[in-house]
Image 1 (cartoon, rainbow, N blue to C red):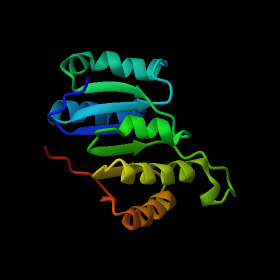
Image 2 (tube, one colour):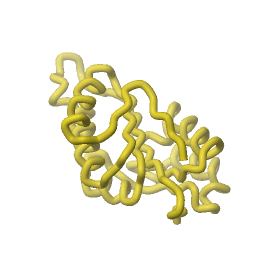
Image 3 (cartoon, rainbow, N blue to C red):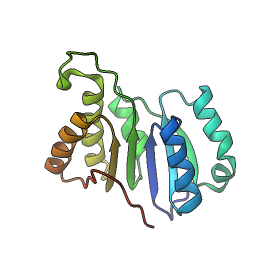
Image 4 (tube, helix red, strand yellow):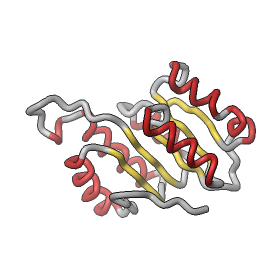
Length: 155
């Protein structure tokens, strides 16, 4: 169970190469709680992340939950009570595929919509440039704070 007296950052891509380092940094140098969202929490990388942060998990500062970027309901559930969202995942669009048709753009749109509904107050995307620009416009229209280059977290 996550400590309720501290702000919580949800993290999509927490078990990836970039994500695991960001999670470690958040837990070691801030007072934020971290919810790592994984499509398959029982797979090797998320379980390694859980082992690496067993102490923080016991303290209620770290939690691993299931969330599928193709299921809005599962992401809504994973973001309940979270102050911020950090999303980092690879682009897999095929050459010639229109940006609006790529799975990442669809998932990015859904994340912006879910963040708005769940009242997420800080939002960081790590994506390809064209997607960042589109999501920046979408975020502004939705009224969500978006910081294009970096997210500075203070408790």
